[in-house]
Length: 315
Image 1 (cartoon, rainbow, N blue to C red):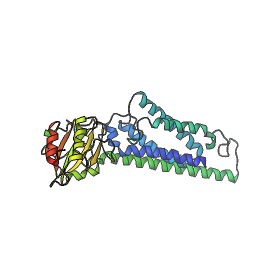
Image 2 (tube, rainbow, N blue to C red):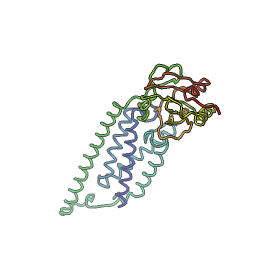
Image 3 (cartoon, helix red, strand yellow):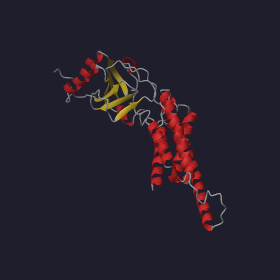
Image 4 (cartoon, rainbow, N blue to C red):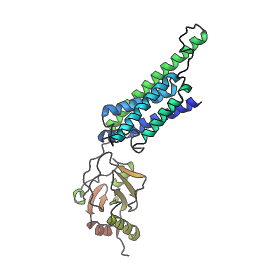
């Protein structure tokens, strides 16, 4: 029972690691992590997928060394990432950097402590040096051979499928635009660049009128303007656009629909995927009509612009 539960845990970790990398494979390749080399990324996902199946169904004495060697190798890989101060991308962007190291060490230690439960160091009829002709031994060998063949076939199939899916993901996932500047004057008359290529919910900005506000969480001017909007906007003004606010200042931008906010917590987040965030003269305000920027102001000019667009009341 212990071995079965442990196999499931190991397999789940490996599947989670492989899937998390598949989801952001193009971003990993564009970045500077240890897995930004295509051959390493393909190898990592292929091996993790294959061993995740091997760990579940292979004979115990063959599962133990493969699992132990893999997690020992992953421990070295994660340690090297920490020593060189680089991302390992072991779990894509789903878990913080450095998380994989204690997980890998824990699995290796557990495998060493439970090796006898896997039959390591014990004799049985299949590994005995003494010849035997009993029907029971033949049945045992046939069962072992069938389990071994099934594990090999299933593991190779899983590895092959993961390579195909990775290739498809790299080929079909949209390239995140390299937006270097979000200066107001540069985008008037152009399509709003932060759209559903980053998050499906941003497709809304292609329909109707929107006021896109870009704040920085460490900008006092931004906080003052955001507070003013929330407290003094005229909700009854005709033709007032919908509000969407982006919180700049890192490689992840929280997005708030329907309010002006500098809060760093949001369910919608823009990932710049290894690239530097665009330069913004915050606060910045962009009036968007059916996906195209019609007016825009940033810095000190943003206050009067926003007040006019939203018909802000004087307190």
